[in-house]
Length: 177
Image 1 (cartoon, rainbow, N blue to C red):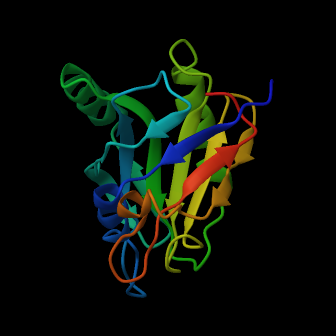
Image 2 (tube, rainbow, N blue to C red; image 1 turned 45 degrees about the vertical axis):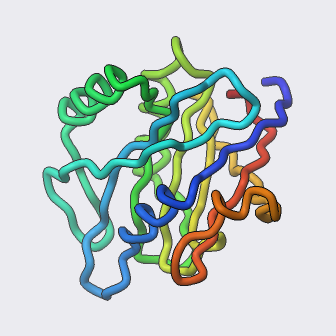
């Protein structure tokens, strides 16, 4: 894999949407959804929209969704000019880290998208305020690579600040798009 220097930008409205799915209560179930971008041709990939998938079932530490439902959503979003670039879900831990099941899910998504993308975004929402409560990785179909957080720049602050001191971040990664 070649080194790449690209950024993932999460605008305020998307960061707010994701933060609303934080598992704040001890008995809150996990949530899951997909991440979409309009333009995959630039060095900065903007997550223009995040969606929530209807879970088949959910527990505090696990969630399952219908692959058919996810595919139907991707087709609908594609008709609106949006490309699925990844998946997100919540964890009941402060600073999130992927479980064995998460690694398998990320690998499945990356393998399925291999013809269109050289990697997929895999985000986990923890209970800590963003940015430490938002874990972001890129899976290339073989390995999961952790993305490196960058502090928001003043000029992009409108894209980097969500409510309740939850800030989203630009991401720098040594992974190809």
